[in-house]
Image (tube, rainbow, N blue to C red; front, side, top):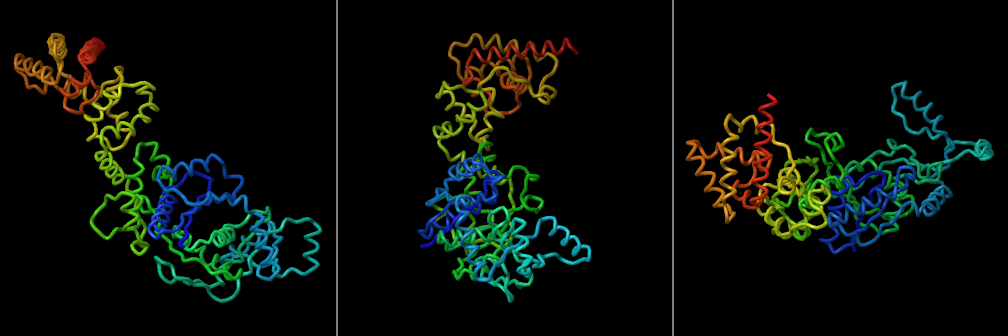
Length: 477
């Protein structure tokens, strides 16, 4: 039975890179009929928080990555790590280290001044019994360090192939810190063994940790799992994806109106290829075609424009009823609609705007005028579309619109085109100022469709307000 895991640390939000790794683990488990496990690596007690645990769980749930076991918490397993570390000490494969951080810092700086690379100098491996007794008598805090044996460590990575490392390049790393918390390279081995993990799929920034972990497996007499190190995700400038490239938290993209299914599709194609010239995949389709063999070795580039394009494709595929369901929470949060709202009206708005939406929040940005009357007018639009005498023409439009009995798209268009003809001007010279007056913007859906949807009273009141604004602006100048 294939068993894989994702093990985020609750010292921050769920990182895009961790989410992509979680997705690869999930797809692999589902494809192979295996088990997907969630473990929370909260050994950093000071920086970990329940709030971040909740955010991580919410983010994984939003992505649709439902775990089969867990969440397991490392903070509840300290006694287990201590037991195995003491076992290694008793077998001479690990030893107590009494060095203080200050002592190590001093020795490290001394070595580095000589132009050499520092690794722990095994000071405590060679302590005499007397020195050991003295430190114990002083009540000195002690860590437990692994005694790295001679030789070399190698493994076959399922993505990168054969990887070897000389053990002399690995320092005697800490298994249990002096405060009792476990070191990463120790706790992860214990957990993966006890949870019967068969495949460790993680970012290739962990390749350097793998030889250390294999040494622990061997020291404890355990078989190690298969390792697959997936390529890192880089920003557009080809450096490791970080906050300076913009948001790296999954929850940010949810809050910005990215659809979870679009985000999953986008993440899947970061470092993995389906082997066909196709980019849109549902979760079920991804599960069917996913394989570790098609994960690349080269880093993947996080292209926000591609994500937005993909999100727009997914929005277009939603039927209007579903799209309204998805958009409503964002409109409520922005205050554009309340708990009670006209569903039929919103359906018509979505019908008009759907092709223009890249995210679920775009309606707030480019369609706020459907929900509120007090908006500003685009300064560039005022400069480009407003000319001397436009107020008089707008007043003529208002007068004729007020006479309409059956308010619809055609009636509105007839009024505008008739006035343009009377004035001897192009229809656009009236259409553009009207759009600016009733929406504050220079672009949007067809003007007459918009006028029909906003309704007679709203359109006329907004045009009156606009004329008043233009006259006042003239006076002020």
